[in-house]
Length: 243
Ligand code: IPE
Ligand code: IPE
Ligand code: MG
Image (cartoon, rainbow, N blue to C red; front, side, top):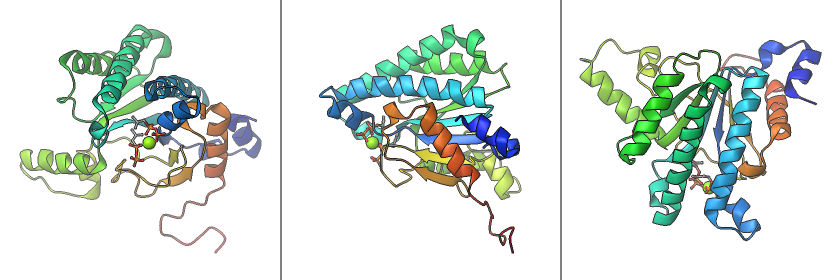
């Protein structure tokens, strides 16, 4: 049963997460299980991401933020990094071609300077040309690290002349600016850690871990994650509803 149907039945449409974040992990193991090179896993992971973005848009999820390449992932073998870069380029070119059909705003979170000039240009073009679409937003985290984001935010704040600082105004210096924090953070791939993802923004996100590897994380797995989220009681430090 789809998550939308489940929520309709429960009459709780408002309990759909507005913002879902995903650590797209397990591509390498998915490939290894099949005797394929790791890059084949990343390619399958990219397909899974496309499917996930369409499904989230269909469900009415306003924001989807995916972890595609971390500040730590540069440690990987050069050929794997090159393979991921080639896939990113392919994805962005396709996204540019399909902008009008998909009608999704694309944002990149992470400093682009370490990337090849052509890839940087594609990232900027995607962001600029998709900015007109305001219905659904997909944030792709590239060369992203949660600590790096906080340090950069602090630097930008200082460069602004250190204006009055609150948690809210500081959030405005993060890559996502004023978008709402993720309601639900999904990590497929079996690991139970955050791996430097959205350290500031996930302060109160509901966490969902799954052993399913990212390339196999399909619509039904999203439904399971959303259903689990809908059964959580978000207390934000308050006492529960039943108290
Ligand atoms: C996640 O899959 C993709 C990136 C980090 C780029 P992995 O490549 O980490 O897959 P596993 O964890 O080795 O299976
Ligand atoms: C997290 O996965 C980064 C991305 C999915 C892009 P990793 O595979 O890099 O994380 P660790 O090494 O298991 O913490
Ligand atoms: Mg991994």
